[in-house]
Amino acid sequence: MTTTSPVVRVRDLRKSYGGVEAVRGISFSIAAGETFALLGPNGAGKSTTIEILEGYRGRDSGEVSVLGVDPHRGGLEWKARLGIVLQTSGESGTVTVTEQLRHFAGFYPNPRDVDEVIDAAGLREKAKTRISKLSGGQRRRVDVALGIIGRPELLFLDEPTTGFDPEARHQFWHLIRQLKAEGTTILLTTHYLDEAAQLGDRAGIIAGGRLIDIGPIDELGGADARVPLVRWRDATGQVREQRTDAPARLVAQLISAADGAEPDDLEVIRPSLEDVYLALVRSDEAQTLAHATPVGADAAADLSEKDVRA
Amino acid sequence: MTTTTTPSPVRPRSAAATTVRLGVSRIGYETRLYFRSPDTLFFTFFFPFIMLGIFTAAFSAAGNIGTNPDGTGGVSVGAYYLPGMLAAGMLLSGVQNLAVDIAGEKSDGTLKRLGGTPLSPLSYFMGKIGQVFVTAILQAGLLLLVARVLLNIELPSDPEKWATFAWVFLFGVITSAFLGIALASVPRSGKSATAVVIPVVLVLQFISGVYLQFTALPEWMQNLASVFPLKWMAQGMRSVFLPDSFAAAEQTGSWDLIWVAGALGVWLVVGLVVSRATFRWIRRDA
Image (cartoon, rainbow over all chains, first blue to last red; front, top):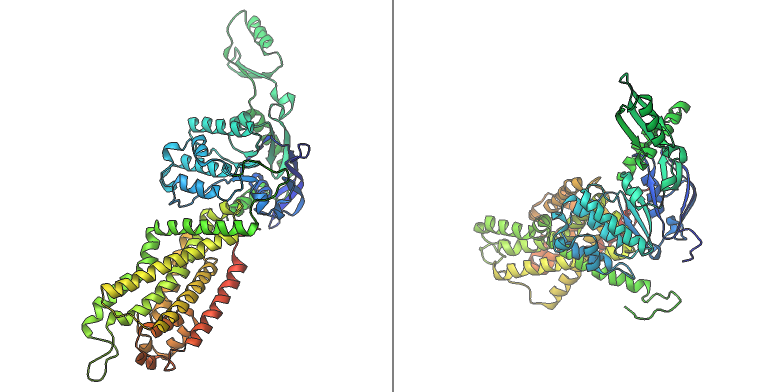
């Protein structure tokens, strides 16, 4: 693998379901070793995009290259280089965790050690338990374990930590950091913005089938979106907000203006990724409404979700 | 695992060898799954045993079947039903087992997961068909053992009869397996699979001479059953386990083994073509 060419390259990707455009011209690249987070509301086109990259779905137009191969033509050797953790799984699971991992390890030319993966996924005490007897969060760890057993060059993680408790999520993050350290390229979708901030090097935000922003996690939304916000209650009981690059100076001014009195309910807020994300998605929704597109974004969302489940 | 690596990415095994190796691995995995599923064990594996027990218990008091006018000869009720139960086992192990199993795997995400791995669909099908053979052979062997030991049924000693048994069994099981894969494309969900598949299989068993004496059925029903493969599997098995005097009671007055082979051959091709045309790792690509 050459280090110069991106592992994933998407150019002007489009996909419609029955006349409704679920993906309307998305472009991005993921470099080798990078963790890229794809964020966006439900039905925004994330799953459609990721399923096209995984080879599960065809596309209407656009160029897609994953590990140098068009996913639509990806053969078994190509699949051997991928790890895929799908969004949900409802398998009946009458095999044990170890049996399942050992069986799947056999599919790959150079798999990881089954016991190491069981330990890394935090499944040691459940190794001999049937998958059907596991809790939802434990089954999700089995999904992740199956996704990495083949030592993938590129790992797809579609909402991997849904249903995890906070401790399990932190263990999962640790596991993903280990994979990153080994050079695995990762494409992550998640609804947890803190997860994207913890793991992602760069992120793209999809809304209404379009990529509305893309960049390093701490630059999303531009510098303006990250200006700290000072909020307080003034003498009349009114809540006031002001964005400023110098919050301490503003607070000092407030105090001196009130003759040394402490302002009520004072907060200095540095926008988190979640705040930046919500601001971006809301402003995109407002623009979409203003332009009054004939097809509702909700209709597209419903249809693509249904199709994904089928 | 080799300790040294060559710079050129030469694959250690050919693709065909990998497909076969994974197919064998799938047979073991699928067979384990089969014996861990209580539903499958009851409705597929032990069902013929249960029916054989019920029929033997219910009708044995009426005496032998196919006796001479003076009441001598004929075969016991258990011996009469044994070939039908063997045929039912072949149908259940292939059609019912795989149709319900694969429809379930389609809807619960198993196939989608496998579709994202380097497992060849050929290995997957080797696993399914291998599992059908392993379980059908165990089932038939156990049925014959129960018939011989518990029901005291005399089994044929003529090697020619066992040769007929072998080809009817192998041909019937492979045909059933492909028809099961084909039928798996019909149910819309895993939950509806049993509701779609079991009535089809059950009706076939009633009209094909498994539970009811085929020769006692009205002619139109016999003709209808002749369109489907189970009638021919049952007839082939009767030719092995019943005395030749029973051939006179068949539709044409003989065992018609050529027709058995012909009918199974046609259904095998139908099953293969439909399986090939309908199978997808995921249900459809919009």
